[in-house]
Image (tube, rainbow, N blue to C red; front, side, top):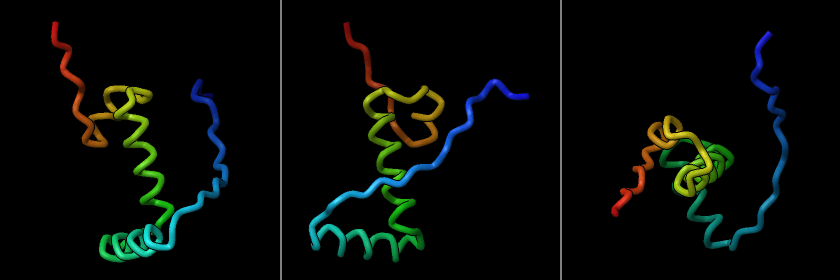
Length: 70
């Protein structure tokens, strides 16, 4: 048996302007993806950029690590 906790899907509703919805439709149609997939990826990228995800996930999402200047 795995130590990884089971993750359950949940539904989240958001409001966007009609213009944003139109742009989302255009982009998703051009990419051949659902709006839900686009939003899930956008959320993951933002979480990675804010360092809430492991480095491996950041790398997979194309998020560069912040340089630590001293």
